[in-house]
Every structure is written in C-alpha cells, then in structure tokens.
Image (cartoon, rainbow, N blue to C red):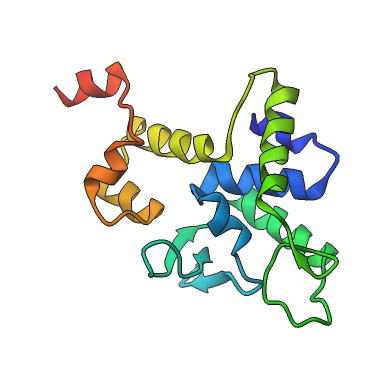
Length: 166
C-alpha cells in the first residue's frame, strides 16, 4: 500500500496515506493538524496532535518519510491570508474528510488490494506494532487511548507472537 501511495500523482494523496499508515492518527486528527504540529523534543522530531477525542495533546515520533512529506506539503502550501492554522487546506478551506477516503482508496486500488479505509490503517499500525514486540502500553500512548481495552480492539496478535510469549 505504501509503495503504491508513493507513486500517486497528487501530493495530498501521498501525504494522507503515509501519515495515517505511519502514525495511527484518526482521519479527523489528521485533518486537524496545525501548521506548527511538527516539534523538536531533544534530538528527535515529533508530531503533536491537536486536542482530540480524549482532550489531551499527544506526541508521535516522526518517521523520516512522514517528516519529509509534511515538509513538502508545507513548502508547497504556504500560509493563507485567512490566518488559518490548519496544515491541510485547499484555497483557504479545510480539506474534507472524504478527500482522505479517496486518497486511501486510490492507493489501495493502485496496490491491487481491494477496499481499504483510513481507520484500517490505524488498526494495521497497532497490529504490526504489537506483532513486532511493542508493549500494549506504548501502543495505547501512541494511539491516544485512555485504557488498554481500547487498544486491544486493534491488536490482533499473530500466532508467532503468542507462541513467543508462551
């Protein structure tokens, strides 16, 4: 999916799929990112998500490809005179959620993998993280969950992981 997304002609499509797949952001959180969402903490670059569903900001480590795509977007889309702080606008208006859906659909079609939704990218990130040994607590923090039971709805542990734990 990511390889197909990188070949999409539209920059927004590439940004949307890569950011959602590598951060676990909800579609609304992605569209609510502000132009100052990229921050430096210590030697690392992080993505600060705006106050969201649980009314707390959270920080997500920036994968280098996500950082690069976001920088490309910001350079190609300088601040508008309307003083909007949103990162993703089109002619001064917020980009609608269906535009994110279309970006994910386009990448899935190009990859030949059928119907994929933006929320499935969040699920996939959580599943891959747990299958690679990331703790449930860390995944919960990454996704902004208040309880571990919320995280477990995303985590489908592979047989290999279960066997290793056993």
